[in-house]
Figure 1 (cartoon, rainbow, N blue to C red):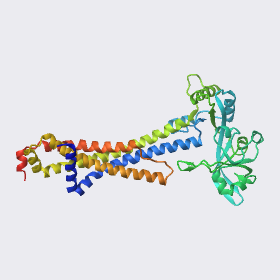
Figure 2: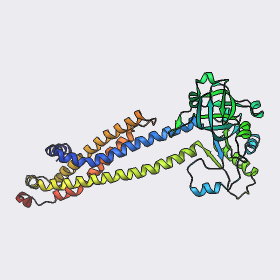
Figure 3: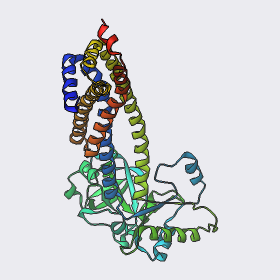
Figure 4: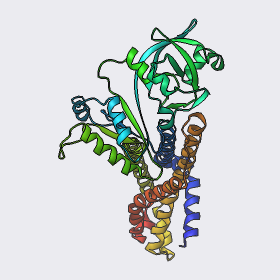
Length: 408
C-alpha cells in the first residue's frame, strides 16, 4: 500500500470514529500546546528582560557592590556581610586611577516620604547620586536640569523627581522651581527625569534624587554601602575595564594575591545569565510536565490502535488473503497512528499560537511563536504517533490470515 493510499485509509477510519479519535488526540494536543506556548513565552520574556536591563542599566555599564545583584545562594550573601563596605572614597580613587573608564559614578539610597502641598507619597526611594550619574548611569532629564558639581560640593537642597512621582505630586512642569519636602527636609525641584517604565512589575519612576553629599549629611547612616557604576571607554572591551577595576580595588582593599575578591562586579550580561538560568530551570520543569502529557497521549493512541486491530481482525484477514503483505498492514496502522497524533499536534500548535498571541496583546512581554516551535510541535506529535503505533502495527501484521478470517 502506497503512503497516500494508507493516509486516505487512515482518515476514513478516523471519520468513522470521530469522537474516539478526538479524545485520543487530546493528550497530544495538551502536550504540544504546553511546548509551543512555553517556547514563545520564554523567548519573549528573555527579550523583554534584555531590553529592560539595557534601558535601566546601560548595555556597557558594569556595577561594583558588596552584595551580588544577581541570584546567588544564601551562603554567599552571608559571607558578603563580613566584607568591608564599599565607600565613596573607593569610587573616587577608582575614578582617578582607572585608565580604561569613560566615567565612574556612585549611588546610595533609602526610603522616605515626599510631599508637595497637600499631596504626600510614602515609601519613596531617595537616591543620593554623584554629579557623574548623568554621564555614566543612564539617568536622563526630561524637564529642567541635573545637579552641578558645585551643588554637590555645597550640599545643596535640590532634587530630581522621577516621572511617576512628579505626576503624583502635581503637574510636572509646574514643579520645577517649587519646594517639596523629602523626609521632612525642604528641597527645590530642579528637574524631572525621563520615564524608565517598570521591570518585573516594579515601577522605576517613583523616586527622588538628591546630590550625594546632601544625602550623606541628612539621611545616611555611618559607614553606609555605596554602589559604584563604571562606563568603559568605547575603544576598550568591558572585560578589560572590569579587570582593571578589579585589580585596583584589590590593591585599595589590601587583598593578598591569592585571596578572593571581597566585592562583586556585575554587568548586564551576568544579570541576564542569572535570569536565563532561572527561566531555563522553569522551562525544563514545564517541558517535563508537557512530556508526561505526550506520554499519556501516546499510551492512549497505543490503546486505541490495539482496540482498532481487534475490531478489524477480519478486515486484516481479508486483505492478507487478497495479497496484502505484512509491510502493507504495518504501514496502514502506522500511518493511522501518526495521523491521530498529528491532528492533536496541529490543534495544539494552534492553541499554543493563540496563548502566545494573547500574552503578547495583554502583557508587556513581547511573546511570539517561532517557526522553531512549530517544527518542534510537528516533530513531537509525529514522533509520538510513530513510537506508540509500532506495537499495534506489528501485532496486526503478525495475525495469521486464516485465523483472522475466522475471527468473529
